[in-house]
Image (tube, rainbow, N blue to C red; front, side, top):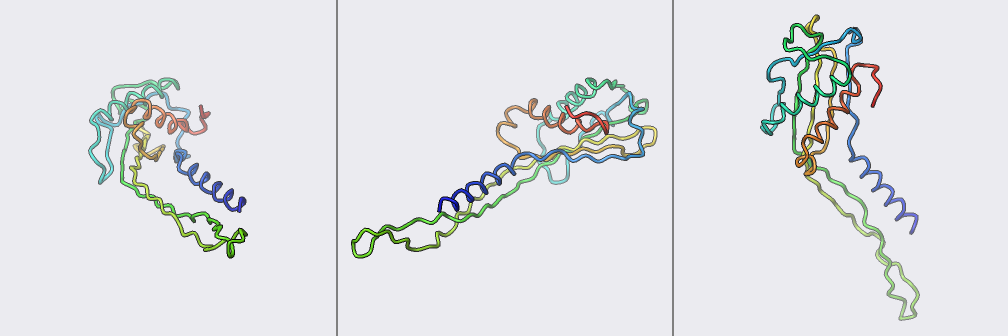
Length: 196
């Protein structure tokens, strides 16, 4: 019995750990010479796009993303230039959000019945099947993609995307949350860069 409860508790703990954030997904064009990149610009004055069906969101998001990306790239030694045609690479963002539902079903532990036989006090494990519990969670899943374009070739060069469950804490601390997410994504830029 203890072994069954231990296995059940371990399974639930692994499932909860699996709900934590997945690492960003990175893709890039291996034919691009990233070592030649020195300067960057944003792809336009308004480099933020929202994926189809996403809610409008905060109008402050674009400015926050631009500032956080600037801080990250400047720390890596890249220089921001005003004219995107004069830069080595240009940056754009895409954000999206969607409602998600997660349903977990797990067996309810057996419960021994100590009714005894004729009052003799011997335990009787009656019933057997304990049924199951169903846990339904509704949440918002947010996605941020950062795209880098090679200016001289006019083609996509690098793509990084992170998907995370949006929490109340994230909504209360958008600067801290976005900084963490952007830094996670850009840890893979340029390709071969050391993860900080």
